Image (cartoon, rainbow, N blue to C red; front, side, top):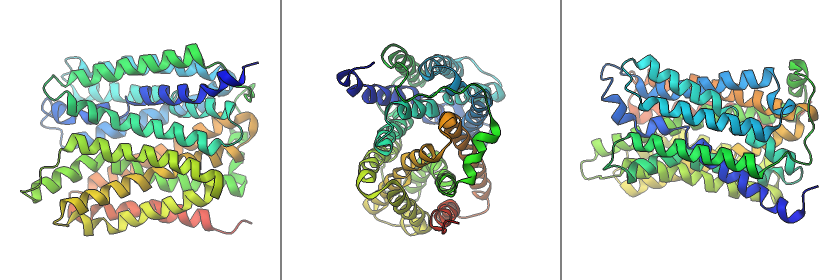
Length: 392
């Protein structure tokens, strides 16, 4: 039996490991400008590069769900193996790649292995912290957000070096995170191992009105979030190009705005203990939806400080609900398939991000970029309808 003193360090270790491993997620995006030089004919590289990671993640979650890997096998060992594999596939884009399809394949495989890191990390946390799960997942998803933002910071500080150093650094960090979990985080006391995959049982959570509301709220949140993250550098570049006096450091502010969401995840988790996870998630989703609708006002603004304040507000509100939705899904999922249910909901959520990213990329050719991101409000609006719909 693990001592209380030892148990106290489990959450920080999981959080640090999650941060280190998820730094792989947007590593390709952070060096996009450098990679684009090798493929000048690829006009949709940003959307396709991001979508391939998401598609790989979806493929991974489907495989993990089908075989119930995080329920049958030790989640810590699954996390370790996937962390090492993801780091190796991430290094693949540093090879002398001539075909863009090979580059996209490496990003797909990295995303596939991230399916054994992000949802499995939540599974590990849920096996240790049955009470106050919203708080625990707040710190855990906050680590994901910091990890997602981190390659932009690396790019900012390694600007005088070759772009490959960003990839080397993120892969090294992922290996460290994988070893931390493997060596210091055994299976949790609340782990209930499943004997076999049961798709019907996993999907049966949707018969539960509370599970369904949390899942649909999460889907609405995902429609918006990753598209905002993917196109954020483009928003900053657009502002610089349309305001000659503006000198926004795109890499640095991409990091700061995305990373600010990590703080809101943690604060949201703490607030959920007092006010309830559903209430805080609903407020955050409403605020981020409002940011989508009001985005033209601020993208047109002549005040750089007002523009950046708006983006920070959007970054904070866009992620605060994420761990709360995950905690609600875990709370109302079938107990023996909690990990698989989390993985399935993640799978659907990330499938939605691909549709959203490709839709914005498509409409970018038809709509003034200042009005483009109002389309992201579709997700929050539908999510809010699901959350506020009376239970039957």
